[in-house]
Amino acid sequence: MRKRACDSCHRRKIQCDGAVPQCNWCKHHGMACTFNRATKVKKRVAAARAGSEKDLVERLNRIERALEAARRNQGSQDPADEERDQSMTPSSSSARASTDGPDPPAADGTPEAAQVRAYDSSVRASGATVGKLHFAGYYMGDISSYNGVPFFSADGQEWIRSRAGEDASINTLLALGPLWQTQHPAPTLLPGFPVLTTGGELPDRAVVEECLSLFSASHFGLAFPVIDHALFLDTIEVAYRPTDGKSIEVVAAKGCVFAFFAIVSLFQQQWKSSPEIDGQACVMAAQSLLVMILQVTNITALETVFMLALYHLFCGHLHQGAMFHSAACRVLFMLGGHLDTTATCTPNQTPEADDCREWRVKNQLRRLFWLSYKLDKEISLRTGQPPSIDDEHCDLSLPQMNWWTQCAGDLGGSPSFLDEATVTSALQPDSLQLTIIKSKISRTLYSVAALKKTDAEMLRDIRELDDELESWRTSVNPSYRPTLTFPRGTVALRKGRLSMEEIILHFEYHYLMAMIHRASGRCRCWANGDGGTLEGVSSSLALSVQASRSTLYFLRAAIHGVEEVAFW
Image 1 (cartoon, rainbow, N blue to C red):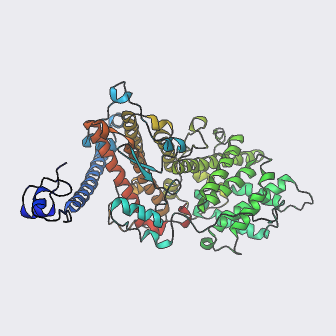
Image 2 (spheres, rainbow, N blue to C red; image 1 turned 180 degrees about the vertical axis):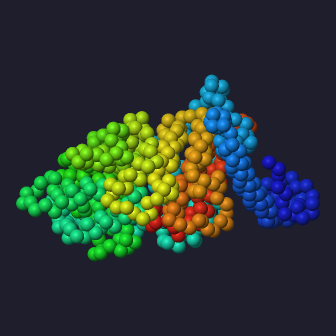
Image 3 (cartoon, one colour; image 1 turned 180 degrees about the horizontal axis):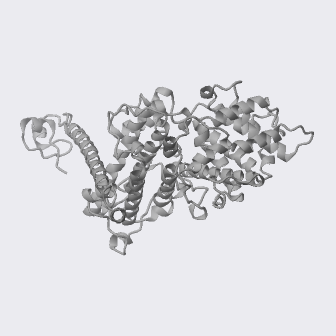
């Protein structure tokens, strides 16, 4: 590193020997040897950083335009030739990696592959590598909503300011209040609080039926079919059945109704339900009955525990929500929901009257499995903890496109928004396929086994996951397909009833892109002096930074179309 001249030598344009505490010239002239002058290095670095960001965005936009042109040209090809070309064509993200640097070396016994990674004991002990930032293989700190400092809190903004040297422009994001947690305190039983054994008194039955109708006719009810309309009518019938004893069947039904009211309470202002529902009181009532509810294993118990998990997660109680979610997964396994038993009786068929309930139970189990699977992978990636659902033990065959459409009839309503476009964007399999990729990211890059991978193995996995994510992106309907990058200054999105689903898909795509390439920060090629690998890692880190920026830019543009419960 070149020595810096003192202020006196710098003004006189003479060579400074850099002696301590005084250089030779200052010592002989009896002057103080100071280094107080301002430098222009920071401005040059900032300018270079801005130029680098602009170049990366322009490069990604050029790649996306080239891909779109290639897809149009392939439209006129023979189907057999098109299928063969698609199998041989790398994704755009792979093209980015190849243009920015050579392919990562294969883990085939080379000296690089033989090196064993070593990390500090704190990383190994917690296993929660998701919230830990690494650069050049060195641990830099924790920042996440679960394992470290919440992103949008005051401390989180200060952390960003200390690392980035500038304030984060998130005033628009904070317009609705604190986004890292909602304003729903976790319900607790205070000392001396009477423990309910029968759940207390249920509200009037007409209120329950009104809420059920509102739920069935809502976007949320279609996206989160936590109950089957016909089965829940049977549950209501049992819950309001006159009985003198404490029947487990009646107690389980009452707990399910209380849990349903807790979910409805999150949307009562939007749905304008009456009377006003105390969600916390309903949750406490349902939780007080869990000891008896879990003595039976049926669809009612599963719906109850799952709705409690969903309520806590939507309220920002990640710890409580994760625990209830784990319990829901165990009940789901006991009922066989992780296996697809609907092959012999699909929603396209009309079951006989005697088989109607069995048919509904099977389809509701499968719906709850996919909902549980989505929550499970999000919780795992967010907390860094092992998932409750092991992919290897589950049937992950994606349902047909019209499966959710047919299931909408099970919800007991025909919502006016239920058309082909809505189903295509919101009800899956786009979202389900993205969740499967999310599971692979968590397992491949952020598990305990991933900490032991060499740089070559890590970069190989990053590239494979990047290819898979890009294949998913190109398979999405062009009308709401996520873009490779969301540039700064984009202030508006297409309005309409699909806005919420578009927001989720766009945000998750950029979020997963950042999670994939952020793992390259654990590579230690800087210390090894491997120039070829260094170029690949540098490109990967640049993609991670740009994807992270895109999540913030997109969220700032889409903030007015996001439901409050989306922030958990």
